[in-house]
Image (cartoon, rainbow, N blue to C red; front, side, top):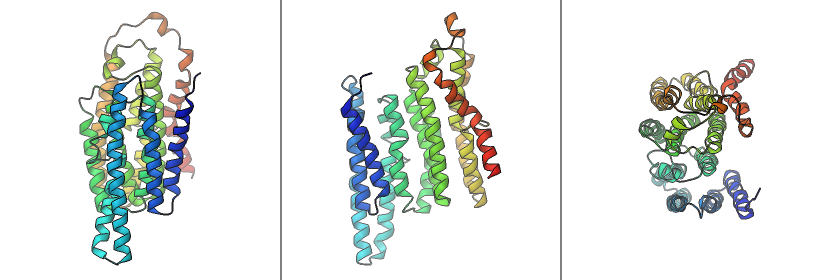
Length: 338
């Protein structure tokens, strides 16, 4: 198998930039780590065979450069206000730092670039953008939280993630809006617990990786392909259950992090926020159910030999799907024993 050595170098620099941003003890070092991460991801996005991916790379660069300049300006403003004890500028600089980091990760209302960049990328780049690229901004924003602002961002992210997913025919855009919705859950859990948002993030990365591997293996990019493709019924069932798990339907694994966040919020008497989040997540779950219901119920032509044998190249999906379906009871048992 041919491996592009330059892409491997950029991939390692991507990881290094994130680790530098997370482990830095100053805002300037964190800014440098984010810049290394950005400049390493641009070549990974670009593809000479796909002009639209180059367009997405340019959009991503412009937005991230804007966010980086705002972050650097707000950090300098924060240092000046701290040094000269200008108290009135400190809340403004903190708000600007939060806004710049939210723009970097694509949370609502700074989400305008996220679906349009996602819809022209390969599935592996989509997975990196949905998971790894969110880690450094999330970690940095946990250092300087503005609680009231994060409440507003959480509600808006859940609202945009729920409404934006309707009438989406592109699966990558659908995953983008789903990512915005999950981001709302991570941000609200960050206010009350440092470990809870990391737990939710790990669950989200696991489930996103499983569903993206399915889409990558069967070259699925549009919703119509899911209805008309010749796929083994077992594999089709596994893929649909993974989508329901990502939506948070019990008793699948995706329900576990949402249950933990709901338990955390209820212990802090945030009952209205729980109601608001659950209602909007049900809307998100609705468009996953719409896909799965149509894919299961619509008649489509299929070859007979596909129904009698599993493709040996996709047998690993069985193990991944077992994790997604049976993970919830096992993890629930571990939590109850703990």
